Image 1 (tube, rainbow over the protein chains, first blue to last red):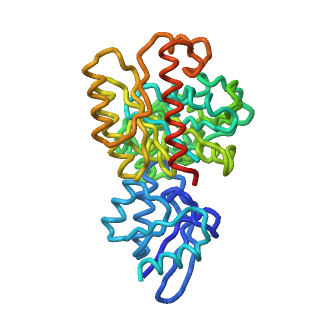
Image 2: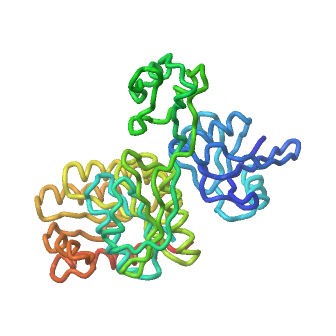
Image 3: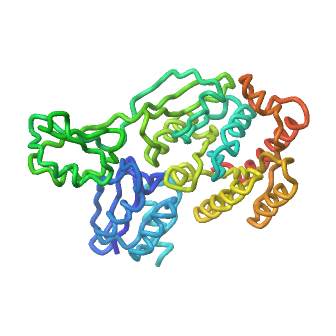
Length: 104
Length: 294
């Protein structure tokens, strides 16, 4: 399973999804980790749905975020991507740990 | 803590109510005027800008005369009729006011004559106000429209000014689209301002549906009561059916408007209408406090 977390500073969970500056991608199977720049962070409209498509293309199965807008949530659901809610500002590792504890 | 004031319908009294709440909160509060298409927080609050920077929307396109081979493929591709032949017919030009920045012309141009550049669409401001509250706002150039991106930028500035302990008041745009969603994101409470009119009630219902889908806590205020008792009752029923607490009702009263014309907010209006405003804001404060700080 691949997990994606919006992050502005690359260390903590960001407050927004579609306009997050980066996404942290964790692959739980092989333990790999990457920070990807969110290409849609500066789009005028449709940032949330754009981010959903961006993550779906990369095979993400779960998004971990404080809040997802209604259109982005619908797009994630259509792509079969689960959403786990965590507070903004916590460390990325902490967000992952909470998610694994929550889902397993 | 962030509180948004939204109504669905335009002209329902969002900025007036926001300004009155800001006056009540005073210096601890930062207003984010996110109704950038019709930004009037600066007028209502008496803004004294002390910082500004340009705002860049999406890319802007233009055609280089020297490179253009006048084939007309771009004009044919443009669904908005934004590309026209220059006088003489030897090249084409983009009319910026009509361009929707879709980029179809760039794909069609075989001569590589269409260049993109960052297009300045307006300015972002940070201001002091005569009420003590600070204000983050923006101004768009003619023909530019607001967007989730711009709302986000205004809110980032407001968040920075307020810090962790401060209160941010978001004056949301009308409607239920992208800029409104960006205005409600990450707020602890949404004040649903229901105008006691057919369109005011209908638009408020649509907004409540949106805010509920985002899991927002809501408080209602009804504005412009006393014009039609049946309509007032309908507005109350809409609030009741949605299960929202009602902080108060503000009557349609010329004294409120004339106070604003004199540069005051609703908070300081003497008489019955002003009493209704103060009661509603006091109720709002205690409800918002009960929702707690993050």
